[in-house]
Each structure stands twice: as C-alpha cells, then as structure tokens.
Image 1: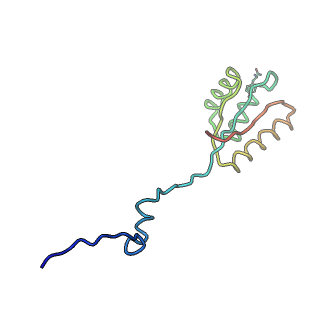
Image 2: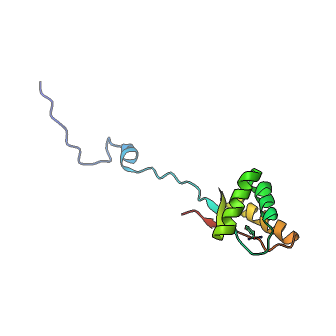
Image 3: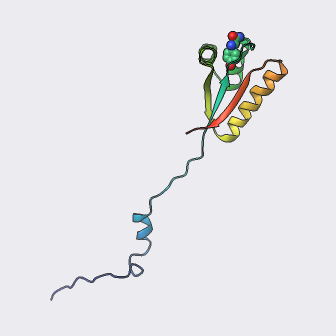
Length: 113
Ligand code: TYC
C-alpha cells in the first residue's frame, strides 16, 4: 500500500484559522504616554518649585531639589511620564497652584516619541 501526498490548492479547506495564527502579526497596542515638562523662568522661587515637585510628583526633597536645579540650568526638564489623563491632571494642578501663588511657573505636556 502507498500514500500519495495530497496537494492543497485551496487554503479554505483544512487550513482554517491557522492562517491567522501564523501569518497575522499580533499588533499589541499600548496606550500613548505623555511627558510632563516643567519650564524655567526668572521669577518663581526655587523653594516653590521644590515644593511643587514634592507635592504633585511624589519626589523626596533631595530629588525635587535636583530636578529643580536641572530646570533652572537647562531651561526645562521632564518631571514625569504618565497616561494622557494623569498628565493633564498634573499640568492643571501645577498651573493652578502657581497661579494661586502668583508665580509665572509653566508646566506643559507632550506625547512621548
Ligand atoms: N529660575 C528660578 C530662579 O532663579 C528658579 C526656577 C527653577 C524657576 C525651576 C522655575 O521651573 C523652574 N528663582
């Protein structure tokens, strides 16, 4: 007794969903992340910026002082990366806190990559 190979010319017969499993690249969608940036200015007191970083970004005093100095020297720094909603909330909290204390401190967000 001999076995003849059967030529499959129509992938609709027994290949089924294997096509999807083997040939379709799974594109895992990750939600976009947003950098929150703090901008330097000439008037906002250093201690106020340190307080902002401690209060709204959960930094220790030493971390906050380091980042504040980086902003002061370089003009701006990323102070955190968050989902769109959290980033928006952080920016609003910082801007509102600065406005209430009459400091011109600016905080913005931008999409990562
Ligand atoms: N440049 C300010 C000063 O000399 C300090 C400062 C730091 C302001 C960081 C804003 O995001 C800032 N008083």
